[in-house]
Length: 265
Length: 265
Image (cartoon, rainbow over all chains, first blue to last red; front, side, top):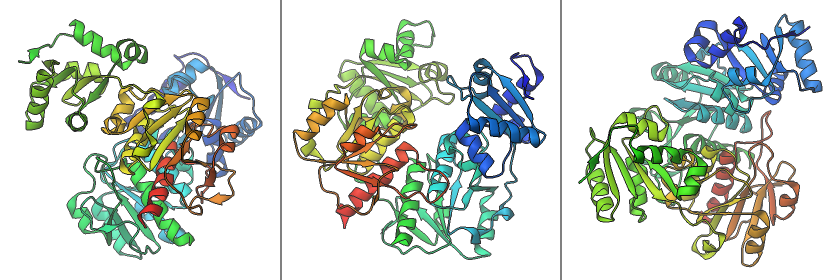
């Protein structure tokens, strides 16, 4: 049976509230995901929360199933209210349920490139919304996952999980240094595809082959020149206006859809 | 000569700080843009700030030009510090300069569709980051501007201006109700292109003609069925994974690049 907790001073409320900070996520090995849609996606992928908070004034058959499965798995099911959910999520209009999950192992050797024709690689990505949006796009284009190179924002941040709309649970995620990634990449098949303002080749020109690794750089700086030099294919997305670059998540999507569009023909 | 203001209690600091709220922007008819890159883009488009704040510890020839032009235009140039800029922008790492601009006239009749082959139309868009990112993409694909239909987030919000990376100043912006938009659209040339989960036609199938109006719906609900019914062309972007939709700004970009890619061939 769910237990009722509505006090801000409750230790479990305090503990979960701290998971909005990276250092606490690291220490506890836990992260937060919110909303029926995302938690249902997680469940379909086999992820059951260790702790499930839900608002008492909501009823939905999918929520009942989540509650039952969380209890069956030995998880802690907590009935609460909108004020507590607001405190836990940091959102003005919080979702009516929130799950706490163990963080995934993000070592690079857990990526099996043969499982998908397309992989996305992001370097020094700083915005959690962009990271989540790239995961969501990765799911849409049938990518296997997202490899985070160098110092990227935490994929388990509340904002990244939220922007991923559940794709955090369907995409493999790895974090590593550039040298480690490059060593791993060159130990197998695959072409590294970068976009650059300085490229001479239009992004629709090359014929892309699987496994394709689409590489996106930091929001402000783009890719370092040394990283561009390692790309097998360097292309530019046409920019017809005054600006010289796209949002990182947008550029990733435009590039990834070109790759899969070629394969769909 | 710039005047020095470093007190939070200064009336102009208080006044500009309030512009982060929509009701104050509306009342004052002013909005905030930040950073040398965006303010320089604005200047190139002929927009000079009424008030220019800059941090004393920065020097750049483009800043000198901005200061000179703002003073020449009768604007108020204020030297300040990072604490004040943090307060005004709401950002932990604020830009070193910040301009206050008069809001644009966003009436639909200021849009001249003959000025561009492509226009973006967003309906009930709620996220300021998405709005700004769509403006930035609009600039990149050579769109003429963004028509905001129904109750969209304010394009002059600090977050939207920031995400637009200056495209707020290069793209025309109109706000109107759906019926007004439809009346205006049908009074001239142009096809309305919507994306829908229920569409049977792949987005690469139709041949798009100018002027093309790419319509994107609300982040959570997508387009209302009645709005989809008004589209001349209704297409679906392939979704190869578990999720059934893309981020709104990403979907807009994927669709808009397909349109211009056809025209580039």
